[in-house]
Length: 278
Image (cartoon, rainbow, N blue to C red; front, top):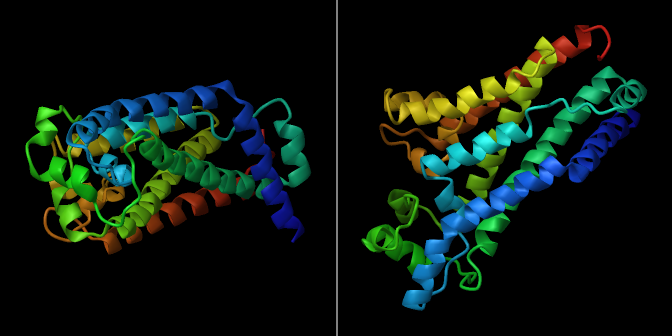
């Protein structure tokens, strides 16, 4: 129990630091402005046709090709300094113990990734106001944009996943999409942490960016089947239909689980063998 309290204390300490960091505030402001720009033509269309927007924008946005690339790239910049070390870091880590500090950092990255993803979900709803309504189906706005040429007429800046909208109920798709995006955000953050921690440098963000760029490269240059090894692709429900060239949800969970366990085990072993925490 004492160890768990120390782990939670490290997590709370890091959350407190990030909440006071100006970079964090600028980051979330940029996220809001970006999503507001994406949703602006959707609001315009809703106003013209006199219909309400169902609150499923998060799913739509994260099944586009470019939008996840932009958002995850910003996220990599946000966590580029992991593990975060301020002036009181050595004292706090020393009091907690090396291993407890490490797992506190992992817990922090898990919670912080969740805050990041849930904030985007909230922004996607807020940026649809005053036309948002909470209904259990996809709604006339999203279905009309997906199945007619209205998206082109109103210059909607993203693709709408027709197959996903045809095959899935929105609430189930939303929950699964949030889980996968949260998972991938955490993996990118823990990758930055692992590289920076092991090599005692700040090149972790470059490795995380490679993971993000890999997805964009696949769909522009490489074989689409390679998407089954792209963490960004595995966060998109429209790619998890189980029909070629797509992959299944079970594969996504398996791949992400192996990636997560491998990364954490490797970093844990290194932490336990490393002398000191500087």
